[in-house]
Image 1 (cartoon, rainbow over the protein chains, first blue to last red):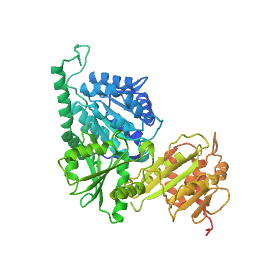
Image 2: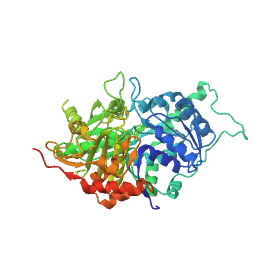
Image 3: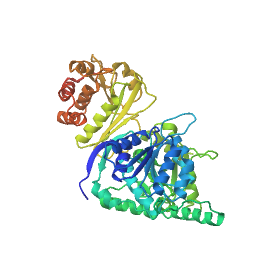
Image 4: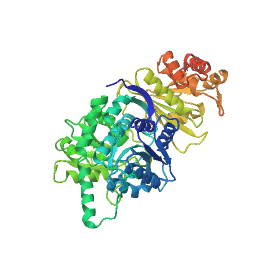
Length: 376
Length: 185
């Protein structure tokens, strides 16, 4: 482990620094709040020669992901970033990346979706991409954003599946916090240059993603589904090896806090999962045996780790920053209930939607909400 | 977490509250602690009320909310004092106000500094007028017991080779001139 450097930086700039140190080859980019500062930083790094990559300015997110897919098929290490409606505009091409088995890494800076217009954090955008075949991380701090982007490239390239690294708009993207930067030597050891198994190459013409009849199409889809499920050990391995090399640990698929003797377990992702630690401390002071499970990985849903982490007979309070329209409550709660069904009948799940469109989620508020849910 | 210090800055757009938040978080790091600056981005326009959260802590900071009940409220213009305090502050909280005259806020420990006069005297001007966040940074460092050399180092790191003497002069003057107002009950 070489000497690491500590700086103060925003979540968005931390993301750009991680992308730079991953030595990406191609960055297609389109600005959208609150993601814009990532693209601005990367464009500047390419311009001033700090990052030897091709920056492709495009006219919209659909083109941005199309350029990412094309560059990845040509064997490049590719990064892009988006938010909210930009991510929705990419939706079709997200399937092209995953079905085409292209290891693109993208940051999505979580933001609510119109209408009405909003700029602030919620998770409707990333969760609306649940069935696109992307692996999804959700991060709770600037440091975790940095570390996770490097792990995401590792996982994506090992298994040829694109990875989305999500973090909350403003609460993380524009928040200045200390950031430990491992040495470039250590990062290069963790993430060697990308060597694809195949690539589109004009010198050796071939084709890619042809029309398939059902007998050929179905096995490809099954393989994608199987491989996404099989990515969990790779996610764990990447986290462990990153720790061995840099000394930094962010948890692998889930992060837990004061869970050992917990009777009430808060369950949430992203920045609210960080502040919830403080809510747990408040509840403990009030004599409530509270704990926390924060999935770092939303897709694949880390079912086995959650099932084995939850204490006996726990009441799980899911705090969702999104709506599962047509159902009471949010998407995270529905995912949790589906993995517990028939496996952990001792667990009760309660759910509340909160923090939509950037409503401030303070530790005091979330602790009070959990207390209120206990009485329901 | 019990040692985490929380501070909210209430100002008007254009007064430099985001930069003040960044300076304070940076000063925490220079002082061997963890720091966090969390500006609130709304539909800002120049002159509209804005705010930013700052946290300092000896250990990792997990909070990401906007400081509902801060230990300190920094008021960048005395016109905002009432509104700023009514947004929330802990019972034993303190208020640090940029104002020409010392006037305590009921129930709260109040510090006063004339940041505008200090910025004018140091000839620190932007297109919007006097740059008050540099003297306010000095004043807040003094109130938080951040050593003056840490304050100076933070400014020098932020703007190396740029207006060094005037920046340090203004921050240092405010560091020494900020004063506690007589309490009102």
